[in-house]
Image 1 (spheres, rainbow, N blue to C red):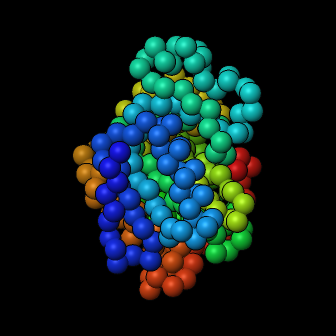
Image 2: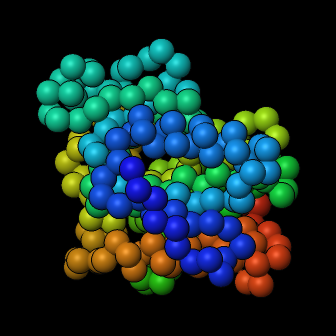
Length: 242
């Protein structure tokens, strides 16, 4: 697997994986990056990629597979993998057209809830550039659009914190994702709300590279400050499903 390193002027490394990546491969890549970060052998790094179709289940589900709909065998028959992950959260889908960001970072502010709010802030600011007013749900992580019964999630977040305050896993932003994949499961264990994508909301095509560039810029602003020296997102509130 070839990694393309970008933007050497940033206070963190950015690595964009070309094409599509198997979830197990990305998971092992993260584990190695965490090991290196603990030893200060690598800088904070933001991995950006797209996955082959895969349903993942986080630690919040325990051994309960009920949110996988008709079950693992059926989901695999559709051409998707199923992977039980060590991240937080419940069941979700990753696939083409979805920007997945895996920041492997050492927390400067030792506050796990603050980190989640900061990830949300990165996405909220990015969506704001497209004229969308995304918001934080008081009970659930992620970035949301709409109001009341019409609320819909556009970005899922699930993370893991390792010793040494090293974060891994991250966010999944639907840009041009085929949303029908989500219909086979109960995304994040939330039955009452739907999911959406940037292209569905805007009614037009959006280049993934354009969205990634904006995510990188806001990631820098929130976590490192505009001059690259600080840490800057708002702490927000603590949701239930972290």
